[in-house]
Length: 101
Image (tube, rainbow, N blue to C red; front, side, top):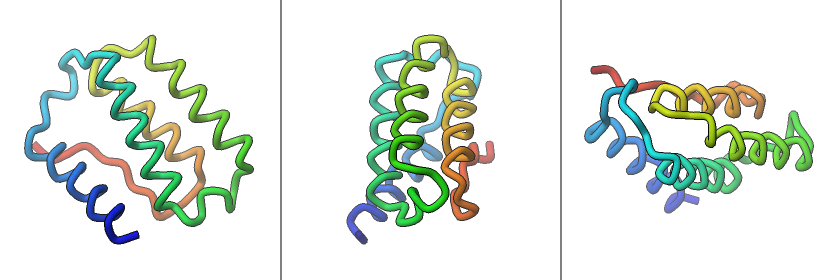
C-alpha cells in the first residue's frame, strides 16, 4: 500500500514540477496512458471506491471516460474529465486540483 501511495505522490509531484499550461494541446495517446494510471491508482488505493457505487457503475464510468478522451484536446479538458470521474466515485477524501502557477 505504501508503494502505491508513494507512486501516487511521485506522479503528482512530477505533474506539478513539469506541468504545462492547462490550455496546451495534450495528445490522446498521453491522455489514455495517464487515464490508465489514474484508474489503476484509484482502484488499488481507494478502499472506499465501491462504498457508494457498485463495481458495475465504477467500471461503466471508467469506460465512459476512456471514450471521452477521443473528444478532448487540452490539459484542461483532461482535468475536467478526471474531476467528473472523481466526483462520481463519491468519496469526500478525493481531491483533484491543478497546480498553482
